[in-house]
Amino acid sequence: MSPNVALISGAIAILALVVSIFGASWLNQKAIERLVDQLEKRFDQRLDQVEKGSDQRLDQFERRIDQRLDQMEKRFDQRLDQVEKRFDQRLAAIDQRLEKIERQLEALFKPLLPPQPSRA
Image 1 (cartoon, rainbow, N blue to C red):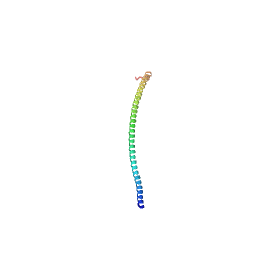
Image 2: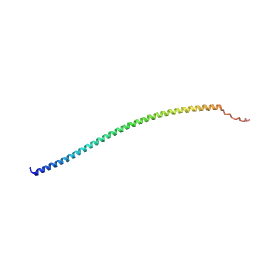
Image 3: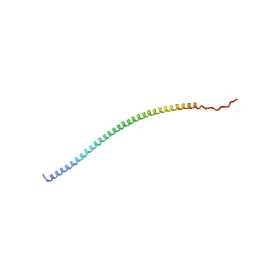
Image 4: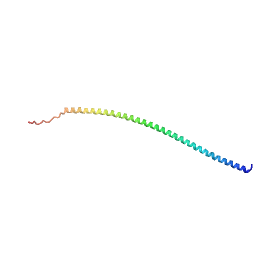
């Protein structure tokens, strides 16, 4: 083999090696980009699932709070009605006592009318 052929075939081999290294690097980069894209999609899907789950839990929590508030409002209204009824009963009892006291006072202190001059 002549030195020129050996030199040319060595240069071609080195060039092929360099091209294959760059080609492998490029293919590896594309594969990594694809994997990153897939990971990003998975991450977005997972975030969507977490968001939906959080929304559902918040909705359930909101419904439970609304139910509890409704129960509290109902109990408050019932209690207020009871207090109002007792107040009305006590007020009626006070009115009866006052009327009784008024009758007793009227019986004790009958107004005396001054004598009227007779008309003849």
